[in-house]
Image (cartoon, rainbow, N blue to C red; front, side, top):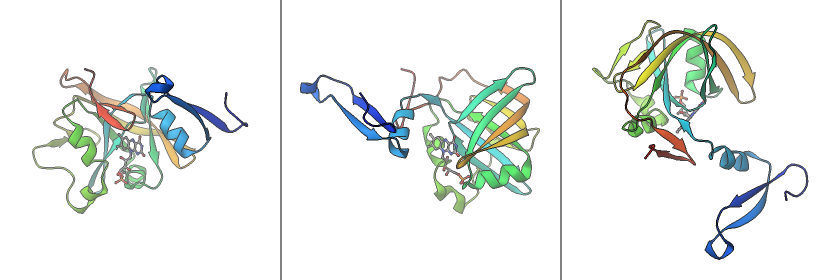
Length: 184
Ligand SMILES: Cc1cc2nc3c(=O)[nH]c(=O)nc-3n(C[C@H](O)[C@H](O)[C@H](O)COP(=O)(O)O)c2cc1C
């Protein structure tokens, strides 16, 4: 059982003689990250173009919201470059990554990419919102910003879908327990 209110019980599965144990941890960022890591997600690259600047960022906090109208949401950390640029552009694309795109997911999550143009010639085109569409994406959606909601250190951005396409039936790239996986 968890201890005082505010603590959480974390169980490392397995019999005690096989390394399994339970521990009570404080309800904080570390236990939250650890627990949320058990929720498997897909992996996307959110892109936008603000003025002359094209930018992309790896995003897993993406979900569909509404069918009528067609709405999606993405949760973007306030401190990111993306947060600033999508506020300027008012539009974005979500590029869905397949299992062969782990290096792309890593690239768009690493600040090292900011030292040079982020998109290589031939590897993308601009969609109807002006946002980069990655050639390797298994599919994509483009959206205009429909609304935003402050949410702690993130902003939830709701987008109205204006274009979408499935390009290949490649199996998805999965993010689970801080690692990239495929379905097999
Ligand atoms: C698998 C994965 C998923 C991520 N999902 C998100 C996300 O949903 N929202 C977010 O703000 N950052 C997310 N990040 C972190 C950003 O990709 C990372 O901080 C990026 O460098 C920020 O880019 P920018 O500041 O250049 O815009 C994720 C990182 C990884 C590796």
